[in-house]
Length: 408
Image 1 (cartoon, one colour):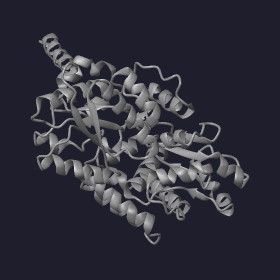
Image 2 (cartoon, one colour):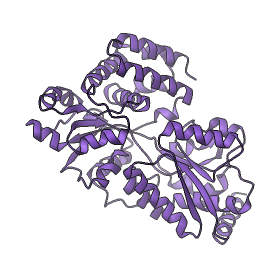
Image 3 (cartoon, one colour):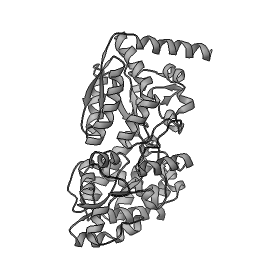
């Protein structure tokens, strides 16, 4: 019976609270200033429970995932680790390496509080829950430096077309129009933002959800590749590698704008910049105002140590507690996964995101729709496209169609 299952789970969590202090190694890739401040809130909450968060940060999502998978498959599991919402953990679950935490989710009532429900769905395999979602991150943001546009003597753009039109004036002032790190995930992420903002939602879902090669090769997507070519030209003098270094170009007025997820807010916060005064944010590039429901979740490997397993249970429950959600997400720049907490102190940009979430203006994140292998292929394509100006939009779209047609 459900009530009995919930009672047993609650008893297990309570027992975890009374165990002796336990060290738990937690792996993640949050290493920028804003990210470090945010993960510090999770560690603080866990340490306050009497246990010890042993931080094991690895810079960069791709390198971190490779280390995590190697540790797990090599029989050296950590206590908990971060992945994105989506399909990244499917093979690890199938191999029996990750804990089923359905009992914790039921005892904590996650199905009643997690919003949107797709976040918990992304943690669910064959009806069982394997991860704790901690935030909602959306890619669909254009961050704009007020200083850069003031120095160039022009108004801050209100949408993508105005942003492109203003590029020449910024270049005349010695400013990079578009800050972009030279990494495939940033470049393919930018393309996906253009896709979400510049074509109808049904086109986006046909390409990434249905893997429809005909739609991927059509005129609507051709428009996206034209916009990507504009982005390539505007970012040609952006030579930084890391996303937060690109964000810093916007913060310091050395670049007009950056297309990046709302985690960029953490960097603006660390720099003590004020939304609406020092910078502006345009969800959906000011064209189609919507958010993707990406973000982060924590998984918990199967461990042989009972005390560590109990500590895992306590950490999983703690991550979705109201106080933890508020403290973590205000620092991270992300939205909470709980639909029942007060974020009235959030800044202007986060309030825009909360309003879109309340309105249901949402799209699934591409990580929820495509496999890591397909994602790697897209990253490779866009590294080449942004590095090689001789690659035409037609050639790039043809390669894109080939990837989509073979995607699972």
